[in-house]
Amino acid sequence: MARLLVADDHRLIFEGLRSAFPAGWTLVWAPTLAAARAALVETAFDGVLLDLSLGRDSGLEAVAEFAARVPTYVLTMHDAPVLARQAREFGARGYFLKDDNLEALVNALSLPPSTDFATSPGLPPLDTDEATSGYEALSGREQQVFVLLAEDKNYKEIASRLTLSPKTVNVHRSNIMRKLGLRSQGELVTLARQLGLIAR
Image (cartoon, rainbow, N blue to C red; front, top):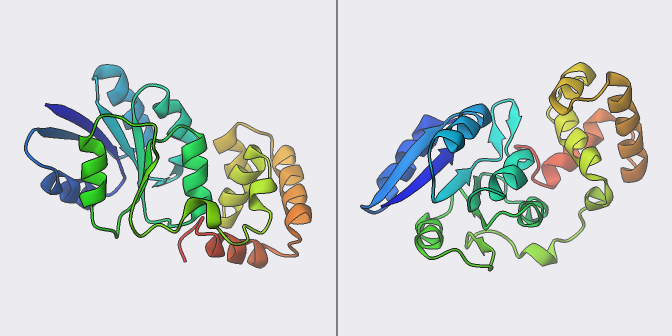
């Protein structure tokens, strides 16, 4: 019997997944990253299905952590190839969209782990993303700050989330605005939406 940990903050998504998987699968729900981490300590899983948006938490930040322990797959609403590439670089085995047919996801998880990176049929090709507008040239920390700024988090919230000082966050913001040629918070949010990093 296969055991899958589903880290997603929406119970309806979990229930839908549970009904979609064939007999022989046991799905366990974790609504937060903290709950997912605790579950991985307590129980052996054959795979983790990880959302990128978990309330105040960023699932992308946890991909490398989880992938080092168990095969990890992303299930998200974000159809940006740039995010799929990051997930792949962090060690994820696949990247799937919530509004796509789940058959590809179930098939990928049912097969023995592969070195190939599995994706939803509806995801654009990963290596043909047209202008990422300099986002991928940002450092990993700048990318994290960029997304949190786009989600309208203030300096104190970002500092707490990333274990930084508010002054360091401000420096990162200045570097981001300069590197991306942005002049306002509105332009930053617009770019984040265009890249699929936040909901439209």
